[in-house]
Amino acid sequence: MPDVLSAPLVVEFPFTRSLGPVQSAFLTGLRERVVLGVRTTDGRTLVPPVEYDPVTAEEIRDLVEVAPTGTVTTWAWNHAPRRGQPLTTPFAWVLVRLDGADTALLHALDAPGPDAVRTGMRVRVRWAEERTGAITDIACFEPYDGEAGESGATGKSVPAGGHSGVFGDPITGIVAPARLDYTYSPGRAQSAYIEALSARRTVGERCPSCRKVYVPPRGACPTCGVATAEQVEVGPRGTVTTFCIVNIKAKNLDIEVPYVYAHIALDGADLALHARIGGIPYDQVRMGLRVAPVWTEGARYPDHYRPTGEPDAAYETYKELL
Image 1: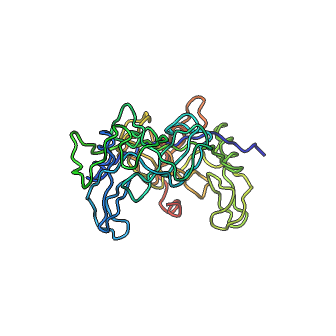
Image 2: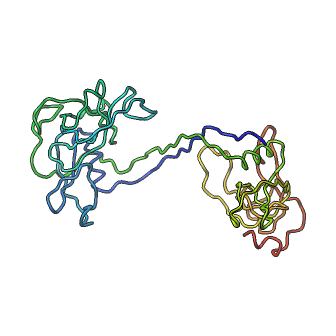
Image 3: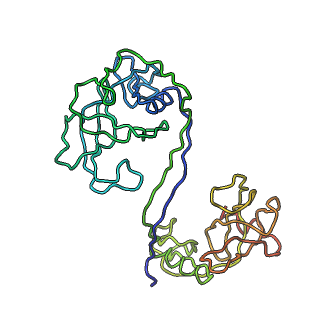
């Protein structure tokens, strides 16, 4: 039995979103060293602001400036900061209720150690030197001994009443990079499948009950719910069961659009796998097309599948695999 494989894996993509008037004012305000909340119909001030009242679901746009000083309501110590976090040295995650607000804002507190942090301690915003209109314009919070309602930067009182939310060059959209780092293990069945691919063989597993062959193998039959262990080599040729035409070029993928991605039922398999179709104009790919894998030097899996030149498979032979 081959060793179970594992490898570090990163899933990353830029998440782009537009901003409504409330979020636009909030982030633009941070760029200008102004913290804005929004007032609900019952008089509460929410920071960070939201566009709809969480109690009544009414749209709310009554902006209110609050102080950059506040009180820690709860906290947790972060012994080992990770990539992309606000500080590179150990710090506390804190919920801070800013003076003038009725809800708490989550951010980092720069403190020498957990013994220096407590619920109820006073803190103030430390602004980033370069601000772009993002939550990171608040570099972190820091301990503060001043009076409530004073600005941690200027010492001036925060003006009472509403705020227009109007700033020059407002922020109308943001790009937030989403990233997940983890260690992936495909398990026993797929480890064997990957090892076979490195030898340019495609191996599935047969269910001992219904006798179906699953590729890629899952270690258990999804129909019968019983474990699978009998290995069966399938392919290498197969049949296109269905497909889609890709018209949007993916970042960092050196494939010109349009191209075709298809479900392919390999000969001897009872489950279709997906792969790219090449060697044929995209508008000539069709259901029933017979294809074979194309390998590149040193690759652990086929680069794509191309037509074999055989007659198309009859619909009856693959209709159950659609």
